Image (cartoon, rainbow, N blue to C red; front, side, top):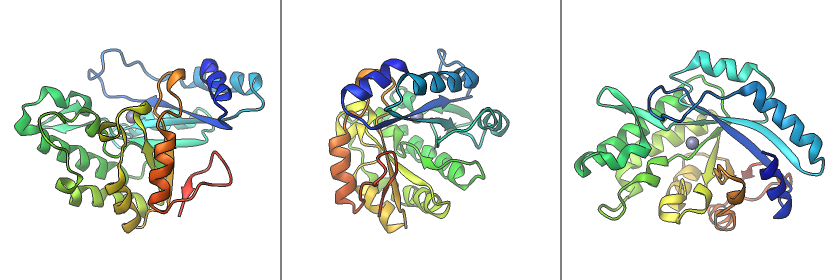
Length: 247
Ligand SMILES: [Zn+2]
């Protein structure tokens, strides 16, 4: 986190949010460890003292909180968080939870149905009472879609995606425009311009730009293009540089 703050200052960012993963699905990611939320808060405070000129927002990305309400409540009770994201990585696929990053292991013929299952899971998240302000990487499976073999078309999932967007607008959430640490837009812009237009049509008012960097060197990658897309969809930057883009 300290190295990330140094990088933020180096590239001229006025502020940064650390939306640390809080994931609970057992057995999907062998390297996944529970979030040390107390250690996290201590590190936020240490970085704030080290870099008083940088605005440092605390936060978490709650993974499938609707499936893990007790674990989620414990994370949220551990201390104040400036920004809470809700996300889905894992969804029910024929009776077991799989991560969308495993999409490539499925037969090509099943990939479309799996993505439909992902959006159903996302619908359950936005329809739940779980507290989050920002809906993260709406079409996360796009990162792992077999683009070389099949074309990914948002229109094939329009009904499901619009249902998610309506639910997000009804709870007055912001939609994250996630740049996947600078990956090519076809894979990396979660979501892209088509879904941004649907977001506006379904009553969405706010966008949150995130680079999902996971490492200091990648913070804010893709933000120039993200700002263009946000502007083209009718959203304006906030006077507060840590605030949402609004329309
Ligand atoms: Zn995520």
